[in-house]
Image 1 (cartoon, one colour):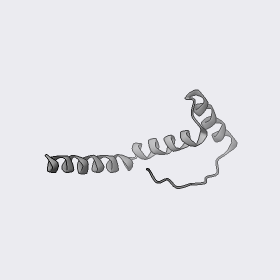
Image 2 (cartoon, helix red, strand yellow):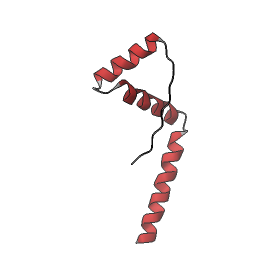
Image 3 (spheres, one colour):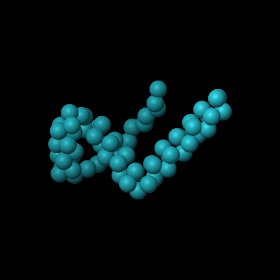
Image 4 (cartoon, helix red, strand yellow):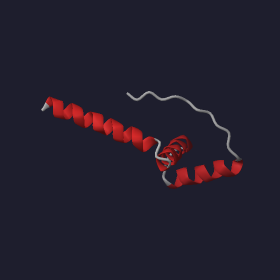
Length: 67
């Protein structure tokens, strides 16, 4: 099970409305959409991609060892 933590942020009413609109269009909650937007922003800055690539590399090494 993934461990998650709560992050509380303040946004303008305009930003909240935009996130709500996008969430409704995708049939998602505002919280889910906010997480997705944060992840996309981190990946755009190449912060999160490095983590994903590293995890994938480690998993591949483990699979090779088991073979």
